[in-house]
Length: 250
Image (tube, rainbow, N blue to C red):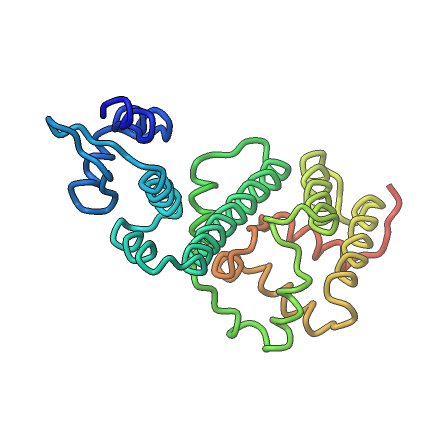
C-alpha cells in the first residue's frame, strides 16, 4: 500500500519541493478546504493525486494574479477560464500603468539632469507631487487651446526631439548669462530666432495662444500650478530683452 501511494501520489514534502511552496502553506490549504489530499495514511500523512496537484497549481497561478483565496475558490468552483484571463488582464494593465509612470518619472529626471548640474530628493518629490496634482488649465486657456497644448506642448517626461530642443535653448541662455553675453548680441538674437522657430512648431500660427502661454511662463505661480518646469526670471528677462532689440554688432 505504501509503495502504491508513493508511486501514484506525492507526499506533502515531495509536493513542496516540486511546486516550491512551503509545507505549511499546503497544510493550510487543506485545513481551509481549498485543496484537500485524495488520501491520508495512518498517522495523518497526506498524499496528493495528479488532480490535486493540478488544483494546487491553479491556486498558485491565481495567487500570482493577486486574487484572494476566496476569489480563487470561487473561480475554481466555476472552472471559468474567462475569469482567470480577465483577472490576469487586469493585473497586467496595472503593471503596465506602473511601468509607464516609472518611465515618465525617469525621463523627467534625465531631462532635469540635462538642465541642472545636480539633483536632490526635493526635485523628485516635487516632480511626483506635480504629476499627481489636479491642474486647472481652464482659467488660463480655452478648451481649444488646451487640446492643442496637451497634444503639442513639450513634456518634461518626454524624450522626443522637440523637448530636447527646448532644453538646449534654456541651456544656451544660461551659458549666455553665465558668460555675460547680452541678449542684444548676435548670439542672443540667434537664440530668439530659434525660439520663434520652435514656437511655430509647437503653437503653429496661433499668436493668441503663444501670448497666453508666454504670460503663464512669466508667472512662477501659474507655471507651478500647471506643473510646468520652472524657468528662472533671468531667462524670461533675456528673451524679452532680445525681442525688443535688433541685432547689434559685438
